[in-house]
Amino acid sequence: RKEVEQDPGPFNVPEGATVAFNCTYSNSASQSFFWYRQDCRKEPKLLMSVYSSGNEDGRFTAQLNRASQYISLLIRDSKLSDSATYLCVVNSGRNFNKFYFGSGTKLNVKP
Amino acid sequence: DGGITQSPKYLFRKEGQNVTLSCEQNLNHDAMYWYRQDPGQGLRLIYYSQIVNDFQKGDIAEGYSVSREKKESFPLTVTSAQKNPTAFYLCASISKQGRTEAFFGQGTRLTVV
Image (cartoon, rainbow over all chains, first blue to last red; front, side, top):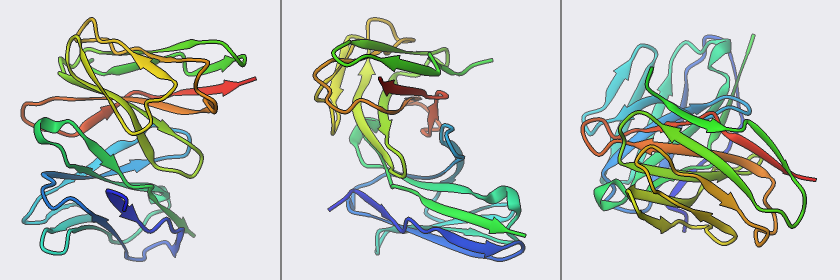
C-alpha cells in the first residue's frame, strides 16, 4: 500500500467553481501534512501546511482528519491561474526523516 | 536571498557515463533530500541526509550515490548502473526547527542520449 494516495484527476472545472481534493495516508503516526502546488516542468512549491484544527488562506481551505487518515484541500472561486498539479505531502518519520509525496491531482480550470 | 540551487538545469548523458547533479542551499537547513520524478508521476525518494557526513537510502537508491561533506551541499551522482536515468531530479532541504516544510530547488532534467 502506498504511503500517500491521491486521485490523479484531472479535475476539469469552470472558472468560479469550488473544487475539493482528498488525500489518504497509511501511517497513523504521521506528524506533518502539507499541500504543494506544482506547475508543469517546475519544482513543487508550498501552498499551505495542514493543521489539526483546519486552516484557511484566502480561497484555499485545508483540513486534516486523523481518525480517517485523510487530508483535504478546498479551492473556492477557482481561477484560471489555479490550473496545476496539487501534491499531498506527509511527513511520516521521526526526526523529520521521511517526506512522502502523493502522485498529485491535476486541476484544469477552464474559462 | 536564501534558497536552494540546483545545477545544471538540463543535463544530457551518454549511456555508460556517470554524471553528478549539484544541490547547494544557504538556508542553514540540516536535512537534505533527492527525489526523482517521472512524467505524470509523483516524487520518489532516492537518498536523504539529516546531518553532515551521514546519509540514508530512500526507496529507489540503486544506481545512485551521494555525499554530504558540507552542510550546504548534497551532490547526487547518477551512475552507469542506473538503467533508466532519464527523469526530473529535485533536491529539497528541510529545517528541523520551526517550520518543517520542504524547500525545493528548480530541478535538473536529465536525459540519456
